[in-house]
Image (cartoon, rainbow, N blue to C red; front, side):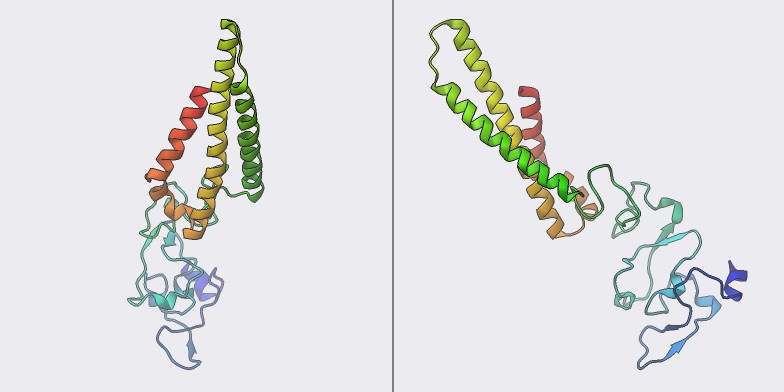
Amino acid sequence: FCKLLSLNVHSFPELTCKGLGSSGGGYRRPGMESICDGKLDCVNGADEEGCPGRFYCYNHSENVSNHSNRTIQWVPAHKKCDKVKDCPNSMDECNLDCHLDNIASPKSLIKSNALSGLNVIFGLAVLILNAMNGHKAMKNSPSNLSAKTDRLLCIQIFVYDFIMGIYLCFIVVASIVLRYQGDYCVLSDWWRSSVYCDILGVIFSFSTHGS
């Protein structure tokens, strides 16, 4: 690594950088002792970028000069995307290199806009169709016991499927709200332990087990 640095072959965006707290257009090349020491010496963070075996716990899209103490925490590179949040700001798991699962992404509970749209369409269709069929079944007045039993079972299915339609619509609403609150990956622990997620879980279980 040091040999590559001396040959100016490195993975840094640039090693000639503007120092933190400097005024005007003063640019300099940081000394070897300030490279990969866990302290930000460059405004663009170049002195800490691409250090072997390290993942730094800061958002690479933010201005590193916002770190007033100029010291940033890092974790071993193998802990990145291991589904365990080691950084205080969860950046080791909440970056675009990490994949949460097939549906969620670090940014959103439902990463596909197409899937969100289909969820809403299917959910509304389920609500309307089951409300219509349920209303029709309740208006019927069968005379024999067999017909009455069949009517009761149909109404039960319509009710449980109607509840599933509510779940499909509200999970999309939750995804939209969480997206406006921030990155889903950062909020995922709060969301999974919240009463809102519990309510949706109960609705889903009630509907699937009932129907």
